[in-house]
Image (tube, rainbow, N blue to C red; front, side, top):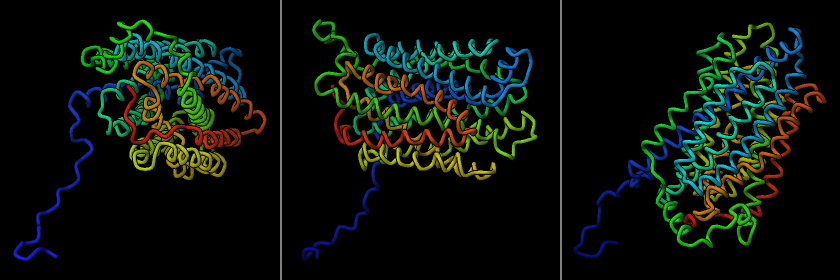
Length: 442
């Protein structure tokens, strides 16, 4: 009851403040440039998945003197090249993570974007399957390194309470890159797979923007100044990840990334091949099948985009570990549903967004979670190691899928068997530190 003689306060309550309030134009610029670099990372990585079948069909046929190529051969060599690609991604991610801590985030972004742009374009020159494997390995060095530097610079430039949402936006670039690759595939259908690889040279322009617009984060500059004044702060950075309090987060983060990468590259990224094997596709021209594949990739990444953008707000509300668990469980269930049950193209289109939400959306957790585990002087090294070291083991995923195709007879059964890897993610989560609400370590 209001006190006598006083009117009750009837002023309208103010609407809640938007999370975007207080973000400076420069912070948005840093996020945009890192996002754009990751868009083209994704586009270059997706191009191979889109042209896998026609490229290997042409290259293997030429090696065999123009004879027909079996699905088993395409599965074998396709899995082998994907495995080599993931090994290159792992080496690049770990190596350039260390480089980003030593030389700076922006310099590393420029170097890595130039690397993956040049060698994606050079893949158009491949004359045999092993030529393509070499170019994809070199491309992967740059793709792996770009993520470590980009995740670190966004985490260090953005305000503490807004980092998770910014990291979710950063990871959404992967879905945008998928859409871009699918759109380019539609526009250039009928021009051959080599033209698609040539388009991959365009990201080199982003390197120029970074060089002109983005400076090194203040956190890194201060940490580097301390290292210069105190030589004892320059130990072996990789060795430090496995000492003291950093051992548990390093192991947990690496296993989680391994699970996500193995599931994506061992199963989800075979979606174009799944589409091509559907009964609906029999008798269609290559150009028509390519068009249907592009729409399927778009459907997958509509769900992925929702997953990327949802992870940050959900992780801020419920915690990092519960949302990682949700994504692992959802992937474990949706993979077999998508790859085993459909018999028509329309059915696949309904299931792909659900699969994309979980199996792709989990990746939005890594630019949020991994930088929170390490101090500034080790941030890119630690995040780069965790996100990429597991790729050496995960590189067996595509190769294993190729073997399973020869055993089970279909890509659907082989990819569904890979879904078991998500149980490993659920098993490791109880040992992962929870970082919700904690400040970024200095």
